[in-house]
Length: 268
Length: 301
Image (tube, rainbow over all chains, first blue to last red):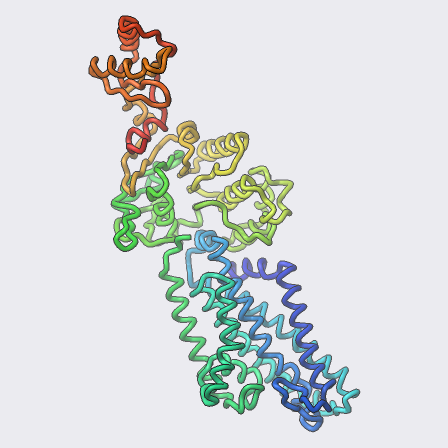
């Protein structure tokens, strides 16, 4: 399994993928955090979907990680794309047969790839945290937001819990991407389906009936990233509920995809 | 310890009602080069995939290097394979692609440069795979198959896309590997290539094994052929009739009459043609080559 993980890391570190992804992470992390402070007095709001996060909220111990927490869902979408592409491309390039000849344990292949992609995701999250919190620290004085509580005991606890929440959420999104990659066996199909579902279909469904948000996978994973409570499209999903329902989606999807992967003939 | 590299009995694969491989039974002795031939769609690649644990047989049993094909993890570390063409990550260099596979299999990456040089890619190892020609891709596939220093090498059409020089190099490489004790199981549509290098042969037609055994046994079992041409094109039909009247099986192929019969009958054939007023422009007794034998046995031409 470790050999598979190290082999996968060799693929993940190729410059176009690594720097391309990390570049996007830096850009959007900086953007999400900057807008919180630069648009603090804007009547259109300074957070997603026109919400306003005021000085009093940003001045709390959790204020420093507000931007990081907001970008969590977006990091999830990036993880979904990377996990889906890295998994499905083995089918489209025909390289799966090479992998299975060198490592016939199919579950080991899956676990090794999953481990390596999780490492990639954690690097992405750490980078995002540094950029988001860094941008917040730089922009807070200009927006007249107090940073006194951000790095106290409560502030450090907030950074830690947000990091864990974002990590759980991103890995959840990534796992869904991997499941789609295994089921659809095409990077384009897997990414298109995943992104369309998360960004459009779920929002439409929630617009039709608000209570459905408590049962949709993307909404649960986004709620985990923000630690529960209201998000742009949500009036609030309890953290424990999001963790349970999101976990069930991920576990069921991963189980079905793993069983198929282990049993399916590799005929291409 | 088993003295066969590959041994399969009644190996079968069905997709719904479609039979891909039907009760294939054959053995490949250790340390030999075994040619695996058959028309397109005859089940060669499916058989190789079953032997490598990529697809599950619907029936039959098999052993590779003495281990059941139900447990590929027991023999695959000693097997190198290239199935259905070379498949690599286009954005990685040839060397990095081999490094990925070496890391995956737990082999030292120190071998990679040496293997690239062995297949003639020593100076192109840092180029991206997507920039390789078909021949270079094929060479990289062979290098990947050699990564585990295999006891058994399974190659599916390894000379596809190679120029004559490359084909000759692959032929020499396979011979040298076999001389060092590696068993080679190789499929190719270039039957003349297999004829030159194979010790053993497994012939498939429509998923069924039609011949398995030593190449020399197959060739010796074939009747010699006398190939004759008249000075005029119209003479072919007359020559065909002469051969058939003498009780020989004869056909017209590629602008000549092919008569199955002993080489010494050529003298009588020449005399009979002369009597019939035919001047022969060619009269050649020869043993059929593998291609002719293959078509004869599979009835595909």
